[in-house]
Image 1 (tube, helix red, strand yellow):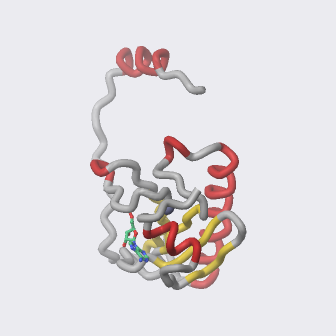
Image 2 (cartoon, rainbow, N blue to C red):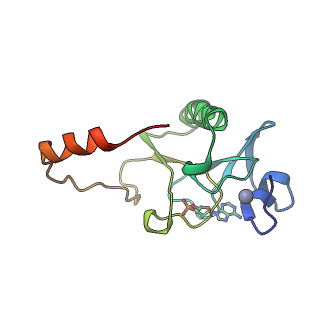
Length: 137
Ligand code: AMP
Ligand code: ZN
């Protein structure tokens, strides 16, 4: 289903222009308008899903499967040294567009991309309790 007030639904349908790298029946790949690095692009399903929680497995398979192809396409053309894949869910996680998307962010020596994780301390007993509690449907 399309959502009327959603910018990525409009980009997916072509109503709003984008610099498109690839598209098929299910996904569109285009350059981010405010790139964190050269080649920073987004993979966006044409169907509207707010985030990871309402994406179904088939759509997820197509989305993440396409990421492997786009990553290789970027690697072939750009002089990248690494690549981050980022997918934000919720405001606190940095999501600003509430239509699921993957960021593919090429990395170069000396770039200004900042996606660092600060390592924390694990309490193994706590982790075991939590592992037993988490259920997948
Ligand atoms: P997020 O913060 O994970 O929701 O990412 C949203 C991304 O969409 C940001 O990196 C924006 O720069 C990008 N973006 C927003 N509007 C457009 C647009 N019209 N064309 C391309 N990228 C966009
Ligand atoms: Zn949408």
